[in-house]
Length: 336
Image 1 (tube, one colour):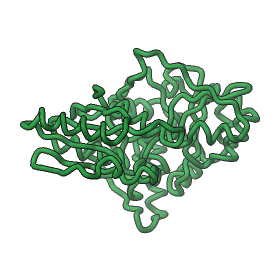
Image 2: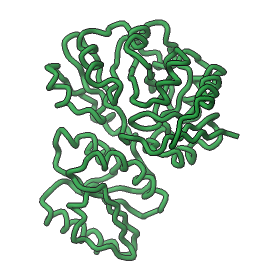
Image 3: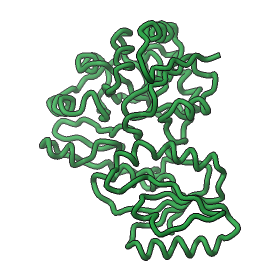
Image 4: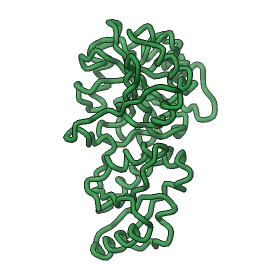
């Protein structure tokens, strides 16, 4: 039987100590971070790390990132923590930026899938920082979800994925941000964005740091990290009249199918629900924080409702909403 610690109102220091003891024994926790929940172990314990891959059904060729509690701890496990990294750490740590460095021999090869690099982040969450501090070791901590599914932002969703395969769940309520961190590779004179998350290219650019966007091979671009079982169609961003025309056309041609419609308030207005159509709002396009905080939970609700098809209404691409567009593109099987 797993244990659930409820820290939504108050942090129980004795239960924090118990969580640390569990990690020291090579067991597995689900912990809160500022972005999404993570499933974690002592990053230096190879047998414990192997459990994470098994529980998540994760390919062992897909490396894990580590969480640390200080810049000094980050430097201890990496080689090229240069001036660019210092600048980014001063601006974004603790926070939603993962930096990829050359690793040293203190990190087991299973964590990095035999690669010579490691992703490192300081999370902005008091509970998890306390655990790492007291453990005095980094934790291996990928997102808390079965690989290929939307990341977990509330304990109920994560528990439905992992059941009793995790020793302790720490519940701090819904994730503050709701989507993953941005991952950047640290180079000598620039950084390269490997995964778009909360932190945008422009936010890094304004620091005077040259940013390169990773050139992902076309056949590998659709990683299916955010997939749900519901067949999904993306309507490209166009003017509102064209969007509504496409939606009404699709609905009229699929009268016998149950349809979920996902979009922002501005695109959902003047569309009426009916017995076969249910709308799910991401809030206003002017409040992207709300959309990021709720998108994974909404996707899971849609999947659990067993609709025949999901229509996702696209939005105009801008730097500030690039993370949402990235999720839209990966969720959807087709475009319309």
